Image (cartoon, each protein chain N blue to C red):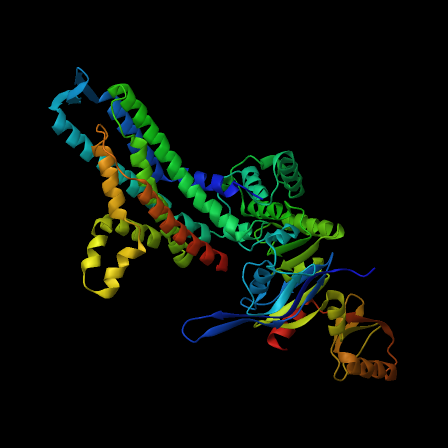
Length: 305
Length: 265
């Protein structure tokens, strides 16, 4: 089944004015495609343009040039389209004097919900984020993690088709992170498209299907996470059985339990070591590709290593 | 969608401000003083003297004193309300919560309109409640002898507030700084009496400045007249004044709305 495009941008560019005759290029012809039901992570160092891209998609700012579409409709064309969107900003802050329930009631009313429907929705989202028991407590008594969960709850109020999450696990303890991660999986399983902005690469690696890395306003790489990581994997671990002597040439073997292991870089070196071991009559127990981490990938594209 | 959510929220924000409690406090004390501290003494239906906290004053002296005090109280109420409400727009735009509001299915026009209505309805209700209480007390004390309703005086005050809230909205959208809006409106309030004199300054730019504002001095004078002649049958033309203020406020409101709609968060 062909999945519908949830988000599409076409050569999106944003230039901010920065004083007299000065400007900042925040986004440079960024084109991305995000499909329905995907968990897409937008990565990049501070100032890379992640927030600018998210804000353009949410209609909070206008692009200097280029186009952005949500489910085929141009962003900013109709405010009613925002019914399809939920957003958790990076620093979610609410009136501390309000209770969790009244905060959601206010935002639910802005989404056009009312009466029993609104009450039911509030109860459902509070239960989803685990805040049902504290719904009538003032937000000023909440921990950072609880406020973050309230932020996710408000983003889910109008049953959005696309959820924009900016640092959703910020301030959460490990258990809280697991809960939010599971919630993200559950939402994606139910068909929701999720655009995730996060600095926590290990978190992203666990949840994202596809990623895009932005650097200095430019999309430097985009693709399925597994494909990108597999494509980068050209390091191998060669394990041999039995004893080896000190004369192993250029190869540096390390003892691990009852085996000896050598790490080699690239296919050519792998062939070389295999020939070397064959000539020395040393039997190979296993050859394992060393999986590149998202952090390695990130560093490679940002630093150009 | 979200028809009055922002109006309700604006009411809550205003009511949580200590300065607004100050306004309500002054109004409550004024009504109590009028009830318990002022006694009108009539002889065959004619007011002959007024007792203020036990001291009996001749009718003319007492009314002059009461007029001055009333004008001063109205000015202070206005000043505090302007200080309390002017930063509302700027704070609304500076609050990170605005990002969330702008991602909800509600138009920017609706958001701006609700915020503006919230501030102005709050002031209108406040003026009407205060004016009604004063009216009821005066009806009781004079037996209905006064001609011009104090509510009219407070509606004159509301016209001024309406214009100032439009100015605060524009300044809030442009500068996103509540202090600028407060500062401008307070200066405008204090200098409103001198604006007309700029027309005679002989400097082209300065002489045009008064035309940027509705006749603020005139509305203050009218308010004073309404209080002064409250026991006399004097015709005070209000309709042209109301119309002028509504036109000016509408223009400022529309400019504010255009700027707000273009605002990037």
